[in-house]
Structures are given as structure tokens and as C-alpha cells.
Amino acid sequence: MKYAQDDEQSAVAGTDAKAGKVGDIVTASIPYDDDYKIYGSIGDLWVLRGDPAAGGTLDKLIEGIGVVSQLAWCWDDAGNLYILDLKGMYKITRGLASIEPMTSDKIPNFTKDLALNPETQRIVLSFDPAKQGIVISVTTIETGANVNYFYDLQSGGFSPETYPVQDAIICSHYYDADDPEQRRL
Image (cartoon, rainbow, N blue to C red):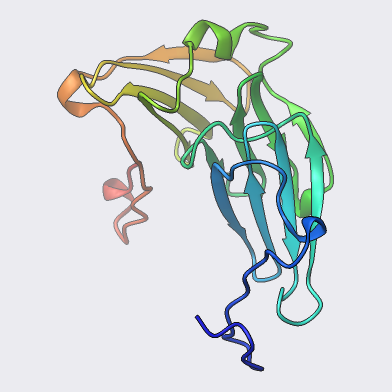
């Protein structure tokens, strides 16, 4: 990489000083519009604002809340970000205005009961616009055994979902087809 280039496509090492580094191992890199990028670690969230090669800043968004794995986050259709931390699920409102716990008051031991282990499990959050909710999927990589929940954004309620081992969720995408009958998560 040529780090000294003077253009908008120049590479940025991000290792010039301790002040320019995210504190822990990055578990998730989350794009947010054209001006932000959120970096999650197990215990912190950081936000990169602007162009790092032209005066951009890397700031700690919050300490003590992070993202458990690379796919343990999703966006809703209103621009809110949902993340799964070892303590529960959180909503970061549009524009990074506030961080709200979504599970701690409903199911205090939610993530503890799931026994999350990013080393052996694929942990995925998926927004379903048709149902207006978040699918939380935890799949054991080796066997395909899975545990899934649906969080209804309108009622705030949880319900379990069941998938056969061969259909376990390891990643997800909402297909926004032209034909409304074909739109599916």
C-alpha cells in the first residue's frame, strides 16, 4: 500500500499513534452512510467520521457495549442500527443520537442463556421489513444446530423461531424484488 498518496483513494494505516487506534480487536466493521464507519469490538464501539486521510476523526462512541461478531448487527428501514453485545441487543438511533437497550428489561440473561461463543458459532442479526422485526440467529458452525429468536419492533416482544439444521442461518439478505410477492428475507 502507498500510504503517502495525496488523493481520495489513498490507503490509511491507522497505526500512527495510540490515539489513532481502536482499543481492542475489531469484531465488526459497519458502514454508515458516506460520512461514518462504526467499528465494534467485544467491549467498545468506535466511529470514524469523515475521510481519515483528510482530517477525519476516530472517536469512542461508547465504552462497555460492543459487537459480539462480524454479522451481529443490522439496520432497520428507519436508519437505526441494532447490535448484539454479550449483555444483550441494543438500538443505536439514526444519526448516532442515542443507544437504547432492547433486551435487558425483557430478558435479563438473554445472551448469557444463549451461551454466545463467536469462535464456534455464527451469530447473525437480520432486519425483516415485512414483519418489522429483527431475527437473531445463533448457529453452531460445526453441526448447524441453531437457536433463533424474532424481536418484534412494534410490540417489543420476543418469539422463538425454528429452522432445520440444513437451513440454519449463517448470513442473510433481504431480497427487495419488483414483485411484492417475491420479497423475502
